[in-house]
Length: 322
Image 1 (cartoon, rainbow, N blue to C red):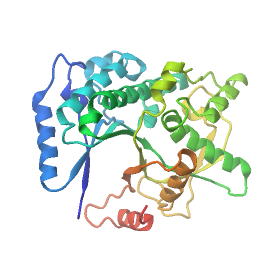
Image 2 (cartoon, helix red, strand yellow; image 1 turned 45 degrees about the vertical axis):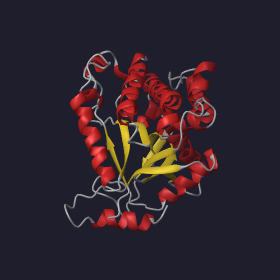
Image 3 (cartoon, helix red, strand yellow; image 1 turned 135 degrees about the vertical axis):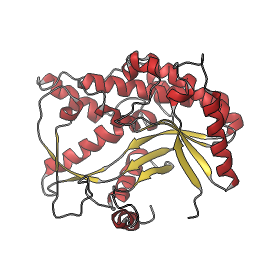
Image 4 (cartoon, rainbow, N blue to C red; image 1 turned 135 degrees about the horizontal axis):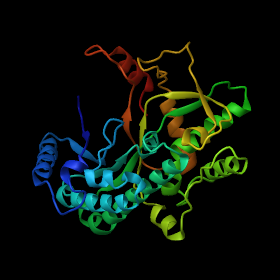
């Protein structure tokens, strides 16, 4: 297969069961070190993800989970300590690090209100930046690696290409989905102006009580530039239109309605199989953030076939060289 890199995730709760450095699972760290070493013997370099939450398993050490999880700012400090331990134990072998996988999808979990979603996202951003600065300050001079986070990054197309409101909705989807995390790190140190202004407008009209966190100058300095490359997970293209929604939740703050195009090939989970969306996504990232290094850390479509996965093969072949 000519594999050159292997991406895998550590289990934070296994490495630090108490959530701090008072108890360190050395056996788990030895296993991870063994895994990376055996890969290098075969010419396969590791890209290591420090934190990989899923819908079924948030992946936090129990004390942090019971302390409020990502709604508690202290979780970001705990993550920095955990990251430092991993850099220290594995960094001589690992040159590519992902701090957090798809922090922009934790809104699916912290979704009681928009403010919960935005507060959790804020603490995730701070956690990433603290880990990045720690690496930059203490480990980069000797280890010479690179650190980023992976964003869920589906493309958006207007459901009706002849309706201006649908084009505006498609761009708004990208601002709320990708720029939400990319803008603070790659450009301004603050959330996208378009996102902040849209939420504020809905707040003024009584359609939402959501507000994005205000960032101090110190926080903006912490976030701005705290990233070495852009990492994207891309799976499908969404067809969107504008639909005004009331309610103080992240999903309704966007005023987005998704449509299903039944004329297009779809996967078992009803995702549109549109390989060309990846190329459009990359152009959008370049247009907004310049000629930055980009890693596609996940791409493909769900396919239930145990062996002859023709749908996935079709998707990857048609996506072509990116």
